[in-house]
Length: 321
Image 1: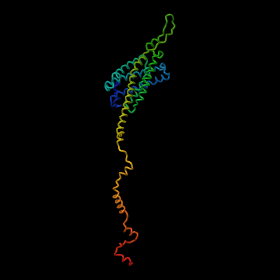
Image 2 (image 1 turned 90 degrees about the vertical axis):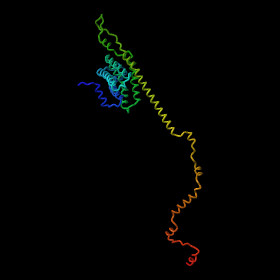
Image 3 (image 1 turned 45 degrees about the vertical axis):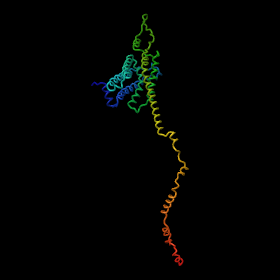
Image 4 (image 1 turned 60 degrees about the vertical axis):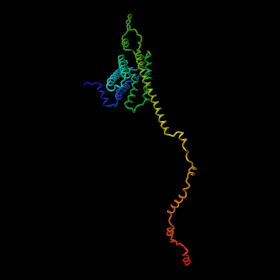
């Protein structure tokens, strides 16, 4: 049963990932490819650091290098074919079509010159692309600082190191034509013995390719720095607006100075209405009168009997007793 790889990728993208925007569709393929290339570069990066930066000690390992290079070519073709149909707005002329077509030629040239391991060593530069892809697909994982640091370490610093390294004559790899020529013994006409041929000169082509690609990486990094500057400026504007809005809710110094001072205790005493004292005393007296028992109730409680009222006519009766 035959099938097309693009159909399989289309099913994986739209059924498994279920992207919401064309940008996410584009970055699903790019994130997957950058992850695979980063993993594929690890053995070659290990040889590089184990050899203390000696590129001659990086193993060719064609069993891994060549398939990894072919995979990257397949990614470039798939991204262009699917992008032309599903996310054409995400493929611009410079970073899309021109970039992919040029890299198709570079990778093919590296494979034919048996330099696939060099491209795999440089494939560690795909790590910041993987970081950016994760941030696009999963915004909660976004870290601008981590992306900028990884981009600088791989596509700026390490890129410059590789440029300088492959410019040096001792580090230049042999081209395929030179390898073929040096594999044939050199016989002289005067003697049947094999003469020692001079050491072949390596090719400067890898250094030239690294140097030509570097301006693109540098422009991307400058764009990253401009993004940091723009976000910092926007943050300052937002903070200034928040401070000004908070200050506008508070009274100004002129408003505070125009307000009357707090009243003092002396002012409160002078403001007391003394004319209300008699009515207040009368209310207090009435309240107390109602609260206490009457005199008759007191006499009854203590057994004093009813108090007689002494008048002018009752004086005689009192003395007779």
